[in-house]
Amino acid sequence: MSAKPWLKAFEEEVARLRPLWEANYDDHIELAPKYPTEPPKWWFNKWAAEYPDKPYVMQGDTVITYGVANDIARRLANALTGLGVKKGDRVAILSPNLPQYVLSIQALLKIGAIEVPTNPLYTVPEISVQIKDSGAETVIVMAMFAEKAIQVLKDPDSPVKRVIVFQVPTMPIEVEKGSSIYDFNEIITAADNTEPEVELTPDDIVRLQYTGGTTGIPKGCVLTNHNVISKAVRIGQWVTNNYTTMEAGDIRALSIIPLNHIFGFMAAVGFNFICGGSLVTVPVPDPDAIMDAIEKYQPATLPAVPALLIMLLNHPRFPNTDFSCFRGGVFCGGSPLPEEILLRFEEIGKCRIVEGYGMSESCQQITSNSGHHTRKIGSVGVPWVDTDVLIVDSVNGVDIMPIGEPGEIIFRGPQLMREYWNNPEETAKVLRDGWFYTGDIGRMDEDGFFYIVDRKKDIIISSGFNVYPREIDEVCYAMPEVQDACTIGVPHPKRGEVAKTFLVLKPGTKLTEEEVIARCREKLAPYKVPTEIEFLDDLPRTPVGKPDRKSLRAMVAEQEN
Image (cartoon, rainbow, N blue to C red; front, side, top):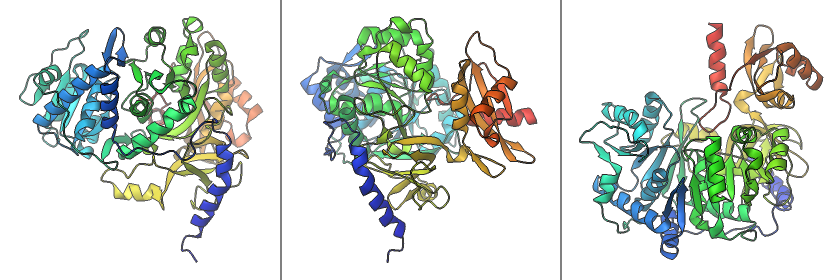
């Protein structure tokens, strides 16, 4: 008898569920796709050779073709090699979504250096933690944020040996001089443009995607060439119903989600390795800049988070901007999108919103609704092709939960990270027998569609009952006056914890704490009703746009002190 009998039960449940999931895929999707062994740089070279004059990355009036992009990427790759960067070395990039960021990614891929994507809005201590954990010796940074990188360079405990600074022509910034500080354009101009001869395998590491910054010490997800390419194959098929709704090369992704986030990277740069498509970068999520980019370049896909869609929907230009160009879909993730917002956005924008679920550890998506077939509003869809997902008991992690009952989401698939960088203890906690334990609470319906209930760590235990903040948020979002909502647990002397909800009201509307609590009582069991409502001008958010519960908890703690 097996020492782990539940693993057999897992296999039997997956075999039972897979036909349900596959029934909800678009009709041309490959159920067992083949994944190329060639690394991303091979694909980029292929498209640059075949279509050198085709636009690759566009921003404003700037259009960089595949041929020019490949020339610059090769020069930067050789310049980095000349500075001592070699295969396996970590290189941090601090930049908004700019063409230089995209070209830097391509340069690192050519020499097998490992990208450490770093949010340029981080403080110096936050950047230092990530740099020290990764061991990055090189930083490529936009001039606006160069001072932070130089501070890290000067830290005697930092591994950083060199900082490479690029300027944006429209906003040049004076940067400190130094023997370890290099100008991006100068080193490229002086470098050779031959293709670096570096052999890469599917198992070589592409990215250390850091996660956990809002919940504790960040952990670097080790993502390989195989992770990225396997996702690129499946994203291309999902967006186009296996290239029946548009040609591969016609795909243009609107790149607003930060490229330092896995969603932003895979949905703009990553999947275009296989497709040979293009991307339109928007460095600041300004609604006018976004509308301008849509009108000018007619992108086919829009990766988004709810906050972005709400911002666009409320902008005066929205009704007059043609969103029907998004034939590949508006892909929304990161946090729940209120149904009212989804339906209004689709009605006015004449496009389809596709909600899904993923994480840094999964190299983007785990589940998704179909781009062209069955969809359930409020659901994050069915498991991605070649991906298995189960709901198990959140305490013991082995008992499969009945249909409709909440439990921890676990998954496996070729997109699953190899490990956490230099962190075997944390790796062992989440990777068990080939399955990844997400820490997210979800449920599955009778058709195999999944619904996110909440983060395991965010569950509020009030008088012994589990209270899911997201459920309270959804009730609040249904109130016509509410624009944003976020609920957290706060200490209570008798009940252990109770719910406190933070609300942002729509301009020109009014709502009192008593009115919100009264309406919640109509929709929620008594133990779920928030005991306190606080109104804010805006919610604090994580870099990718999710409501930041950590900041809200810190705010409450500070108020109590």
